[in-house]
Amino acid sequence: MEQQKLPNATLIIVFGIISIITCCCYGVIGLIFGVIGLVLANKALKLYAENPEMYEDVKNVKTGRILSIIGIVLNVIYLLLSIWAISKFGWDTLQDPEKMQEILEQYQ
Image 1 (cartoon, rainbow, N blue to C red):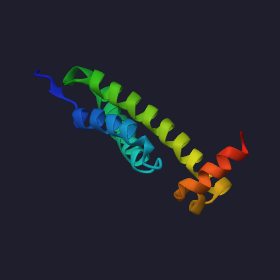
Image 2 (cartoon, rainbow, N blue to C red; image 1 turned 120 degrees about the vertical axis):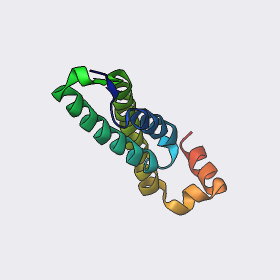
Image 3 (cartoon, rainbow, N blue to C red; image 1 turned 180 degrees about the vertical axis):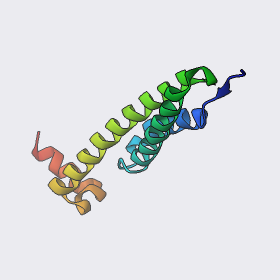
């Protein structure tokens, strides 16, 4: 029997890469891509577990899953850091470089 590719194997790895690259977009965009990549990877691995000799490209799915997990962790850390900075300094202070410079000079 001819092996076929796992569904969305390429898309999973692309979403994992995008989730890591976009982690500095306040943690929201990358988090969305990471969660979607992780859900798709889990579905593909479940499909592979049912009939492993029928599918190939399981390495790409596993790589995409790992990239998605790394992207989710980075995005959650960045999101928490952003929430902390906004609650500590305020949104107006973060938008004004002069006010931010004054606050940073106080901590030195």
